[in-house]
Length: 385
Image (cartoon, rainbow, N blue to C red):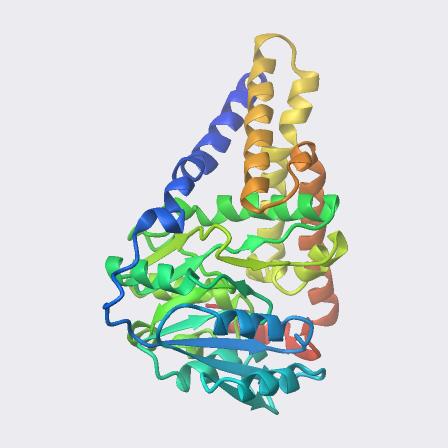
């Protein structure tokens, strides 16, 4: 056991480098503007159907829709789904649609049995889509005018079936930014973005802010019908494409799309209430193993630096230097405050609290309540994809 403590720092450094190093090196090559240049102006662009589901998004939906209308892509339609909103979301959608025939508004009055609300709205939009390609997005995203043209250029040139973009996260206050940065780090470790385009089915990605799919491929793999009761609709859409052997990529669009994920540190914690326990398949054993592993990887180096003497201490110091540097880089990727650099351990504890809170609430209630709809836990477990 003594040898494990002595060499533990170097082992942990190797884990950090192997897990996150390749993504660090390759992410810069995955910047959208570096991939390809748009075709010339005479190119025959295919129709893209943009599906925008929203429930109680009155504060953002008009901004989102107007930013979509400002896209310079020559051929697109917008299908805006008002999913049983209790605020003015539907009214705002209708008002925007009066000014532009490219928007069609669909009002969902009742959720059919056996569906999650958002999954049903996405499937409904896809069924009404006339385009050869479908862009699934959220009701709080802001788009830059050239983002769809740039992305479609890549989609067509590389013959992808599914292409997702990581949105720029609009920064907030210090602790909020720290938690968002930690989430970005965990996302990079779990997804392994550099392998998303590989044929290895274990590695896939899906981003709710920007999931662009080829409609024929989407229909061939069953679409949202297959994941109708899976809370991680965006991620599982990516898994669905990858498991069916379709080509997939994950890119960074710069400032092409942006979103304020949450409006406070507590908002980040609450925002994970629905998804965190789902991400470990509603399993306490998996959550416990995840917790132990992440504590060893992120927290134990601090312990080793204090309790280990001599040359072995340098392994723990090197691990912490790499970890905090990567954390700072993840903060830059998330457009958070660079001063979050020392917040690595605190933000991790915040994330673990969010995960265990999510599990506690789901187990206590026997299910997940989200946007005024309750989904029983046994049903969610049974319908995991």
